[in-house]
Length: 225
Image 1 (cartoon, rainbow, N blue to C red):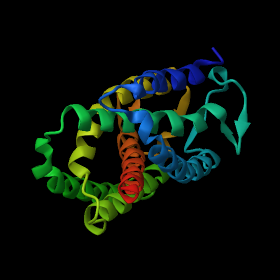
Image 2: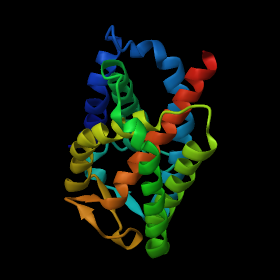
Image 3: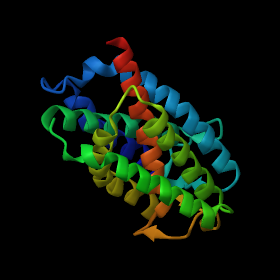
Image 4: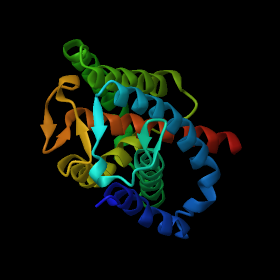
């Protein structure tokens, strides 16, 4: 039982890691781009995580943890920022390799504008709640930068496709984390709306996490070229 969260982390990364040597995707050859992206993004999100733990935005159930803590966070929570981004960027690269044609290209700007508008609307009503404020504020800044300031690397149409596919394992993993529960949320600090047991904000937390990782991954990859 104390290994539950650790086991979930290992399950998340197992198949992406094994399949990284697939001849068509050749993902292992891109580790030199993905791991720096994961490290930089992970530092940002770990600071966020430490702050939220101290503010009691969320907490962790010790019954499902091995008991090793670093910087006030369980070891498993720190591993989360390695295993989940790796798996999601792997999905991104698999989709690009096996399905190069992407009809979302003509809709990506409209989707970005829709999400930016959603961020503004939710911030207007939920600015007094820490998780809602930081989550949607951060997403607004990153999304606006990538779509409107970053003009060198255009990848949002590929990002949205990967995000949609990543929602499938997201519901499985977050479903376990929130239903057992391993991660416990203080509903006074979020909108209080859940999809099953998953807080609404978590969907956009994943979007921010994936977008920052993929943006940095694309930057490192294209600079090398």
